[in-house]
Length: 332
Image 1 (tube, one colour):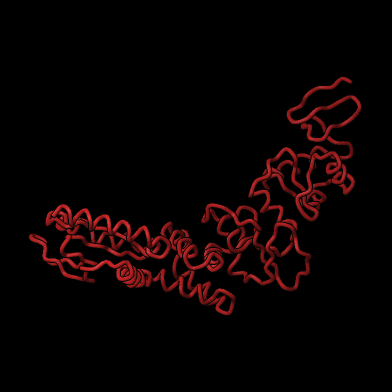
Image 2: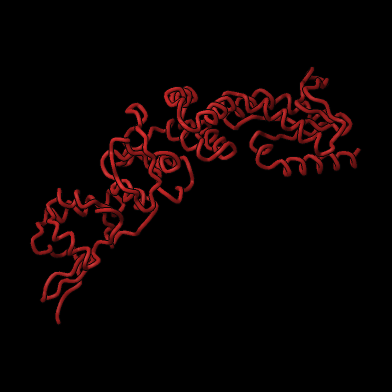
């Protein structure tokens, strides 16, 4: 049997082999085939039956491509073009196409789609209005709720909640510690603004997770630092650390008076307690520089901790503090 190799397939004298770019399948126009290829490239190798039909393919052609495994099933009336690699992006697009009209990407899937979280969740999180009736979809975490027009948009070809809505929604699903890190990171990168997060919270005040959202917003507004200070005090008391005082003035020659968050006077160690990284830039600007130089010149050592470490890694905080205090005691 003779034949020749094309870019992605083979044409044989006996007929068409799926995937060949050098020929057109019987009954499929060149323009339809080109449209399908453009759509597949734009959608990470995924398309729906409806999109294929709109491009000019018949139901029989779709079934034939599935039978020859040129296309692979990827959901309810959704296919993955075999020459495209399956990825988290392709699975997300497939899930959205499978749910169909009215689907909105939400929560952890949405913040990942916005590139605000390093990996997607195991299940694609999709919201669908209560007026739509669909059966459960494999690989989909379906939320039956309406998303207000002000809280959704299109991003990278998918309907998705806005950045602020996505961040707050995902944060409440991640829980206090991980959710706080997500909000802090998004604010620090200036991908969202605190007023926008508050506006989303007020619009969705009755939803599950609203109390946690309120706490996260209070922490973001500056409450994390005062909470971090109280937590550091509790941890030091519980860890048996003594000889420290809080918010203590230090007289520095050539500088004047400085206030340390926590001061170990005997070892000349100052512990500075920050809230979130979102606020740290301004606070560091105010605390560092001449003040830091004056402390060092007077023989003081400055340690820094923050809300995330105190909340998620308290043992690390205490171990670092103990090592520093022990080293300073030996050197004096």
